[in-house]
Length: 409
Length: 179
Image (cartoon, rainbow over all chains, first blue to last red; front, side, top):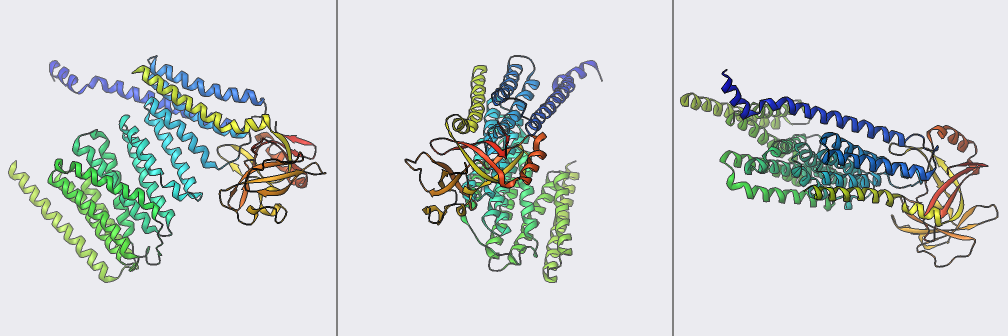
């Protein structure tokens, strides 16, 4: 390659920066692991011996450790050319903050429900995550808040805990957007789906409600991801949450497709779990409406197909309270739609991952029905006929696509 | 931009400090302004990941059954999560024993009586004095001491005017644990 051409390629793709970028990332990872280790060490110290020092000295020491870590981190991040080390120190400061909560409980023999400690730790960490725009501290706060939520909801506070998915949407989703962190954004949606599923499961003795909440959360996640991709508004955030949402819907349909799981299931409904699930569906509808005009035909078909799959899960749940066999039928249909979407998208967009995911999902579904003892032969035959038809149609579509491509070439 | 970041950072740091102060403020006030009360205890020994080792303590005032019969309305109809006030009286053995369970803070009490604020949790009454943290090095010693002298275990509390209690010392016979 000529020297001039090499220089041009280098200028376009910033090839000389690739090494520096990976070195910087490595440094950030090393500093963060260091911060984690130091923070973990301080937490272990909390669980060890503290009787050697008088109370006043202990309190002064723990406040000094917190202030020292945070202030040194801030100084290095914003006033010296060490942003990664500074960030790691602030992250470490947030771990020390949590350790200090435990240490104060020890010093003053404070009793109380264990999850409250995680709540205040999460609040303090979240504030710091916003202040320094850190996705890593945000992820820490997210994990802590989820621990609090699980403990709080399990401690007979199901009604109040309903507010948690909204707190996630208000405080963590915007943080993911501002920090442009795919990881934090996707983790927040994972937290939303899990929290909604947990609330629905807690509100009744029926797993069917959890499926509905999971489908609603999954559809919200998928729609949000698609919105980023279609509108090109922070498109880098779209893929992970769209895939997450698709997987959640697929999981709902797959679990719902099992006949034996629901036949002896009794339904008793307590309504508050519906609030976050309904809000997720409404938010999905708003996002869908806003991006509808910018979507092409294929995107609209996929959106409608996934909406139908979710609707089938909901319908199956509602109707199965009278006839338990209805949910598996609707679950299977929903799963077939999802498999068809994956295969179709893979063929039309020439995306191998989507094609193989759809095909594998279909194969899993067929295998599950084949091995399922409770499924009647009539249902099995119906499932196989539908699967076979879809596969043949997909094959024909792919053949046509290949011919068009050959003609165009 | 940098000033704005500094402001947000300072606010977040201030919030963390305020949370830490808030966590211990009530206990600090009770310890510095409260009167001493000594109660008889019953221990168990769980393990907390966050806070190291501690013993969980129960008291006569931890259940409705520990109070004399017909000693107050909350005895008959406990409201889950509801606040109650245990009135304890100093008796000849030097310990403070339950005499009444009230649903509101008494306005005046004789010198030999004190009130401790509690809350119904899972059929029991908790006062925020149920956990006594023990150093790792003394864990086995204290556990053994508690097992062997269960009937002689007491705690010293500091109780402020509003009934908030702080657990200060664990006393087993003439041995004192805590500071």
